Image 1 (cartoon, helix red, strand yellow):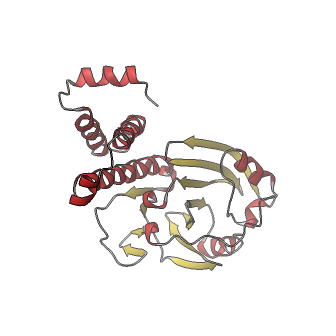
Image 2: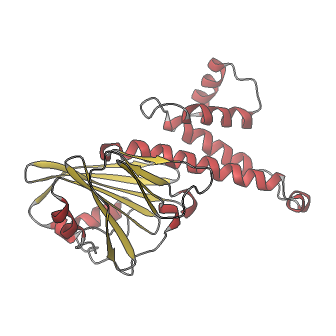
Length: 265
C-alpha cells in the first residue's frame, strides 16, 4: 500500500484543493473510470483505507442517528467504495478468465443468472449458501492454502489426480480481499483456479463472463450451485461458497467439465 508521504506527494502533483474526504472520493472515482490496465488498485485501496478511518472518527450521536441523514450517508458511502474496490481488484485478479466484476447501483435483474448473447452475468450477491463440509482439507494443497489464509476450500476431487500438475501459485492480499491463483497443466494445456475470499458479504461482487459460446449448465453440490459453460475453446466453472468465490478455467469439453465439477467436495 502507498505510504502517507507518497500520497501527499500525489495530492500535491494533482493540485487537489478540497477537503481530505473530498479528495479521497474524487481520486477513487477517477480511478474507477479508467480501463482495467490503467486502474491503480493500490491507490484505490489506500484511499478506501483512509476513508474508513475518517468515518470511524465521526461520533455516532443521537442527533445524527435521529435525522436519518448524516451517519446513514457515511455508511452508504463506505459500502459503495468498498464494493467499488472489490470489483476493481476482482477485474485484475480474474482477468485470465475473461471475467469482469461489475458494480451496479441497485438490482437490475431479479434472477441469479442472466444470459445475454455471448455473455453471462451471475449475481453472487443474491446467494450466500455455505457448504456443509469440506472433505479435502487433509490434502497438501489444502494445507498450503490454509497456511496462507484459506482455511476452508471447496475444490473438485478430480483436480488432485496425477493428470493435473500445479505449475505456479500466486497470492494477493488486500484489506478486504484475499485471492489465490493456482495455475496448472492438464494434458499439455494450461488452466487455472482462482479463489477470492471477501471480508464481508456486502462486498461480494456480481460478475460477467464474456465470449460465452454455450448455454449455462447448473450443478447442485449440496447447498452450492455450480455454473459451467464454454468460453471460447475452454470451459469456465464458477461458484460461491460463503464469502469465497471460485473461478476455474479448464481446457476440456463441456461434458467432461460437468463430470469434473461433480467431484467438488
